[in-house]
Length: 476
Ligand code: NAD
Image (cartoon, rainbow, N blue to C red):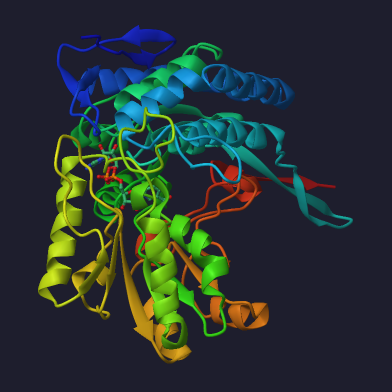
């Protein structure tokens, strides 16, 4: 059984203790990864610290050109890395293109694009004030060493979101992947790290405790965290002790609201993928669907038709559309929430029973008959089950969307765009999509509010978020 290694200061680094990575579709052990020690975390931070001044001092054009080489290396290695995503995370390989499954190949394509776009962006100096006596310029400086802590749902893509803007802006990085999806990320960092000066990107690996050593270290200048709200709170506490700024991309419980007058057949596919992309294990997936009573039965029927037609199985088999839930803890959570819905008298429209056999397979499940306050509505399920709630008054649907502490995304569906806009502006969420859901883009800032976190990623604003402002003020 191969043990994969961390990448620190341009060198492979093992550890005395290791842990297994398992395939969620089969239970097969895929390999082993190091459990970094506290001393190894410190030495990764030291390597990043030592490399940072020279990296930041490079001309911007050089860093941009290097980043384009990273994008090319990701493309060249995409078939290999996509297989790691599928075997370790579970999402099917899928393909690219509008009619294809947003699977592991799509994730690798995203890694390439989300590397090219920050490489093409600039942070120009802003002259914020000028008169006869003075000139004041706003410059953006890198923070220094960025600690990145990643989740297991889109393991490579989220690692790229955290690392690439950071290094583009002149920071160096130490990243800790999720313990559920470590090997693919270690391999990705090795691929790009070999093209960069030693110490610019470094990895540590292991359970949450390793992440807490990284986040709590006084040698860190900025934390990029993507994961659950409960872990985010712990990291925010650790960051506060060192007065370190953080970007917090946390859990969501996105509401999708179907307004009266929408077209159920036309929107069904968009709603389906909005909810079930990556088996629902997506931060900004639709997790509660509020449908006007006039369209309720048609919408449920259209979604049922899609949900029952999607092939589910081992994502390495071509043609698979749905894979397993990534880990047992998440699987048990989904089972528990569906059981709680049954006990509350809900109707299971389809799915609702665990599948037999190996692997964490759970069918796509639609649930009706619940109201706000039911656990399946109020808690983030992060899995292949969608509660569909009937409403009769749009004001009530808006109030439902806003009543939770989550505020990542939301969507409004209607053929009347002005009506949809009016509702969208009343919803408390970092992004409100109209007639689409979860459609992130590398040029468009993305981030949560309320319990879903703070700070944005992507686009120029995302690049600014990995820099700190510095005013240069000149007396004339
Ligand atoms: P998690 O919080 O359990 O783990 C995330 C990472 O934090 C892992 O690497 C883990 O090892 C590490 N960690 C755990 N305890 C830690 C501690 N005390 N200190 C430092 N690090 C620690 O989250 P998860 O289950 O991997 O991810 C799923 C969650 O992530 C969902 O809630 C989902 O909505 C959210 N998410 C949000 C976004 C977003 O952009 N807002 C994107 C993807 C996922």
